[in-house]
Length: 264
Image 1 (cartoon, rainbow, N blue to C red):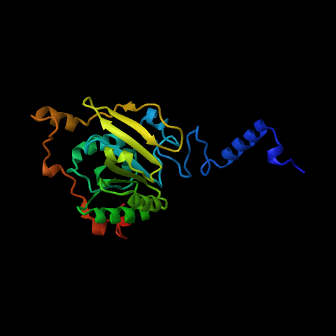
Image 2 (cartoon, rainbow, N blue to C red):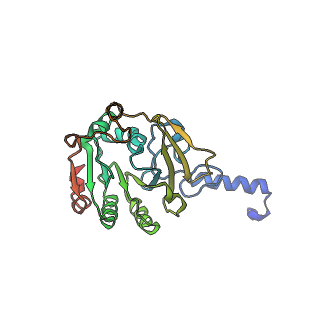
């Protein structure tokens, strides 16, 4: 008969605990190490960022909350590497309620296949939440990018549960002030764009120890945006022509139901 665990030396008990943790990598993790996910993470395209993310990349089947100091500060540039790879593989990229006009040439120059981009317009917060939840319940998307500045913790909890049944990436954009609120999202990043085109990212919540400091990523502007900034009298106002805007958009009421699979 084996001795009871309480009668074993502390070093041996610790060794057994570590062995148990190693045998259950997705269900159990130690606070001093990065956790992992049951599904395979997708590399972010930035080696420094991947080292800070559990699973070495963006995790599917969960909410990833990106908190920005301002809208349009670099959301697409930060996600361009992963969105490019997904769209080139034929996966649908869904943009739900973007706060500004989507500039198609800039996305194309970031390597994103705009034929795979679907824009869903919705003005009412309740409609946005409903559309996000329905999209998450489908299996027809590669990545969902949604802007939910007014979402409450209970709303996000519902969406996190829905994300568990999906296989795509789900990014929720919220203002930086929301960092003080509780959130069920297992991964939260505080992002800030700099005037030189770089983006600082601080992981404020993850399955693992806290990060020591923000990291700076070289997420360069696309040539068309760089040229537009140089031509504009006001560097924060870009001359966007409506002819270049993505026209592959549908209302929220028809975006998230059974029609979504046919759009992939």
